[in-house]
Length: 146
Image 1 (cartoon, rainbow, N blue to C red):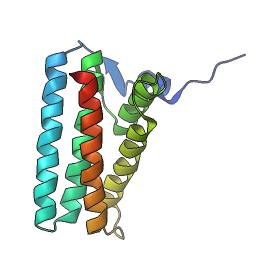
Image 2 (image 1 turned 135 degrees about the horizontal axis):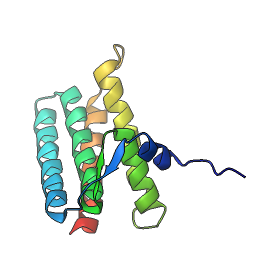
Image 3 (image 1 turned 90 degrees about the vertical axis):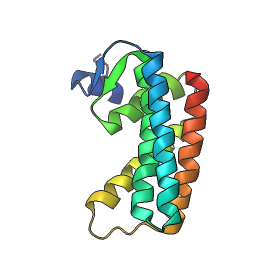
Image 4 (image 1 turned 60 degrees about the vertical axis):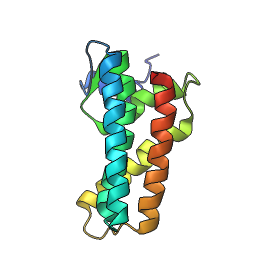
């Protein structure tokens, strides 16, 4: 019987996640970068720049999640694969709530729509929700890093 490759295994096979040197220091820098993106998202919302807010909020989530990979000694080439790594290594081991990966996936898709779809219109509510959820992702990941 042939075992099916997991989504994460496929990411490794395609070299969308690769081994590198683990670094707690760089992981903490990634958390700092996440916080910087979050502050930018908040400033964007103040000026009703909802598209920029959505993109900045997702960038905050991305850099927070990326901190886990960096700490573990991996480098991603795919936002999708980043989420699959967090899912398999942290959610499936009950170290992190599945809601974190759900947020990464949801806002990755919204960011994609915002950047590439001509008919997508972000709302103030989308932007406010994105900020709130970026704060959650950063807080939960930071607990694991620190």
